[in-house]
Length: 266
Image 1 (cartoon, helix red, strand yellow):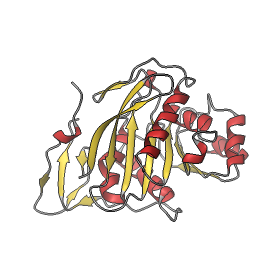
Image 2 (spheres, one colour):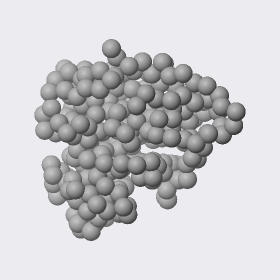
Image 3 (cartoon, helix red, strand yellow):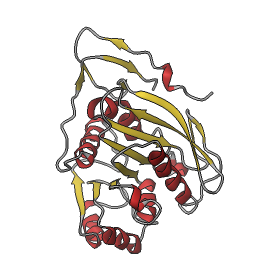
Image 4 (tube, helix red, strand yellow):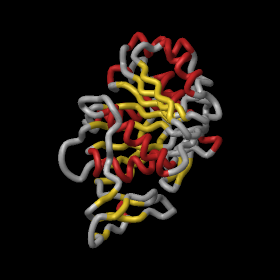
């Protein structure tokens, strides 16, 4: 059965409560489908602020589906739970081709990042057609490869402001892709865990030196999957600070919420 985001049960506590991993804050959430140029249907969810302006839009690209990555990978799930309410940010999550989650399964099969070019283009096109402003690619692990390979070329480049990369392995993305980003002039924020399994901060800084506008930030104590509320919150703060209208340092998102909230199933 496809998960329905309208099924969250929101209740009002007597006062402020801590925002935990499973806390869902109010948003306008809807299941969406993205149509690729090569005929696939990708399933996803769009979470929008309940009220007020949309300050930025995150187009999220998930980790490797053959190793458990999907639209519900925990950092992206928490982004959709929190950022519409806390930061006025829209969050688009979707399963790349052949990937499944409680939301459903996208058609097609994993194509090692090649056919997924159409998936990136479909997601950006959807955001543009919905009129979502200040659009940023946010890639995590395999998703960073997609952002780097396809984010600085058309038709995507002119439709996004830049990208935020979480735990980039730089396996599929090459120096050629980094050079394209350098030529585009579009900003890159690169968050690299101290204990990453694939690319650690010193090597990441050397590799991304090809992109003068890239800001590489090593995160002490973190691992590739950003496990733990401390690290997930750090990532969300860094993303919000980077994509805000003024850009710059990490945001200081609230850690408590005084309003209706729901609890997601684990």
